[in-house]
Amino acid sequence: MNEVIHGIVQGRTIRLAQDPGIDDGQAVEVVLRPISSPGQWGEGLRRCAGALADYPEMDQHMDEIQNERKLDSRPELPE
Image (cartoon, rainbow, N blue to C red; front, side, top):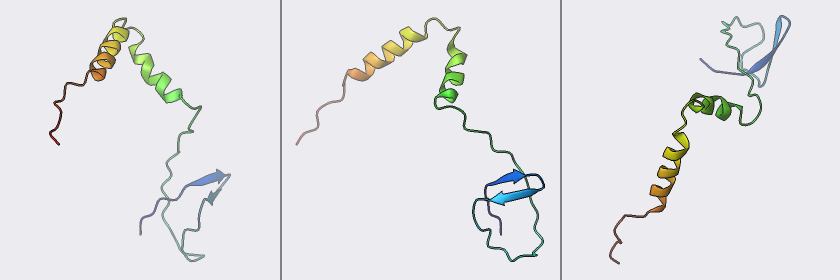
């Protein structure tokens, strides 16, 4: 049985978010991977957009893409 259950470390104790469904006293193997905190809303977008900060033509390219999306060049479907 492999199951991922989140929990909170408190000293040498880990408080699980849900019942693991394992009998008390059962030996288990534990692999710990810290979960990064979600941070503030929009923080990931700001970090990603920072890669384009030194690309002065980006606004022009984005405007062109937006204008192309407004043009509907698909043919009408017959009814």
